Image (tube, rainbow, N blue to C red; front, side, top):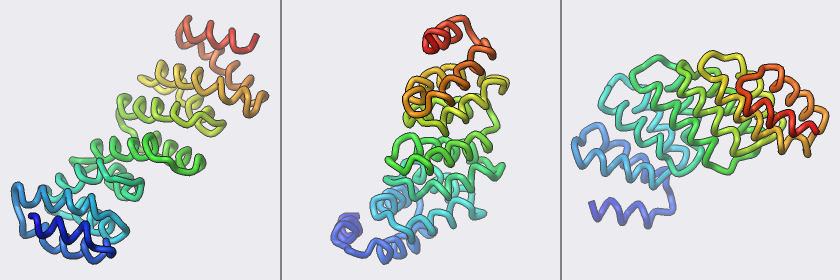
Length: 208
């Protein structure tokens, strides 16, 4: 382990490292395999992500399991496209992958437009209200016109009404400064939806 570890931290070429680790992963098991996946995560880079895609979407369930776990805690947003691909399938690890994808746009500093696009993708893929609500809640981390519109669109989705109302209200405060017209129109929509007395009264207060 020490030798592999040292080589990775010294290597200025993460792709060569990833290639070496990737070759060892299928023939390893147990703690060794866990260690190698962790080294892949530390190495990062385009080649590591490409190899992880192969493991996460391959036919070996144990490798899918380990790869989707590792991708879910990747150190950058580079893993997001692979996580989305797995989430879009209806495989055993789709829900886990969606959780990792939501974490990517919630946690990493990305251009706002990218985060809005990713949030929209997550909402499209989410099959269960708890997944949808996690995506809606994550959008409050980057309030803008785009997330405001996405949250408002979820107001009539069964199981997500309360989360959407709460997020819409939170984001509305920012949007009122950014684009007062869109802010007011969205707040009216929120009031009309009348999801809960608390949210409706707070929304009315914003318009005063």
